[in-house]
Image (tube, rainbow, N blue to C red; front, side):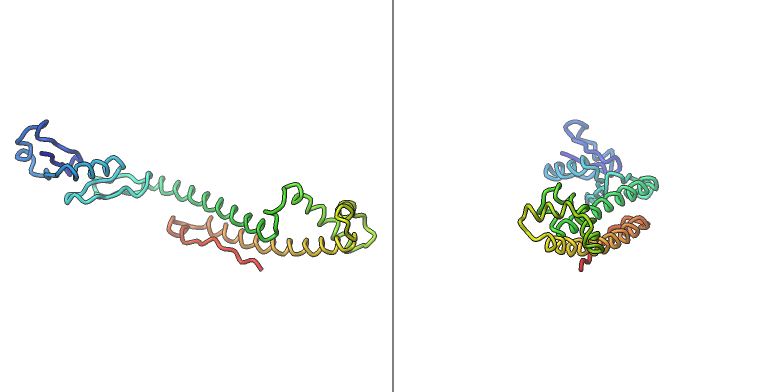
Amino acid sequence: MIYFDPQKQTFLDTTIHGEDIAEKNKDLIEINQEQHYSLLDALNRGAKIKDDLSILEKPSPLHEWDDEKKAFILPKDAEKNALKQAKAQKINELNILSQTLINTQSGANELPDFEVQSWTLQAIEAKAWQNDKTAPTPVLDSIAKQRNLPADALKTAALRKTLAYETLTAQIVGQRQALQTRIENAKTIDELNAINITFQAA
């Protein structure tokens, strides 16, 4: 027969420990083979078995068992470190989502990197042309030539896209920074988890 000792969180077998083990320890609980496997699996993953054989799972690897409270607790230092780590993960998620939104809304996700990197030069030239139609625009002129398009038509389109991109990024930058501030100011894991990362793009 197999018994479980809730106090010591261990198993005793009459074939090993003697037929009278239950008489020597009244706290022992007789269990069957199926219960033995189930409880052993629970102990192996860090859980605790209660006096009624119900399983008390360990909430996280950072939690520790408190014999006095008969409960898993999160030490103060561990809680602080867990919150710090969770904040870093949340900010990383925030950055990825905001960048993905910018790439999708602007169409950058459909273009090679070298072309997207040319947007800065195109924007500078388009704005210079807006202010002075005689300003040199070698990049835009070359693109227009390769595409067999009127240079002024391409510059107009480039200017329109530049202004739209700047409006989009300004909106998302502001929202991202506001969300990061909320994340950094969160005092608990629950408060942090309650922060929903969403963006409003016009």
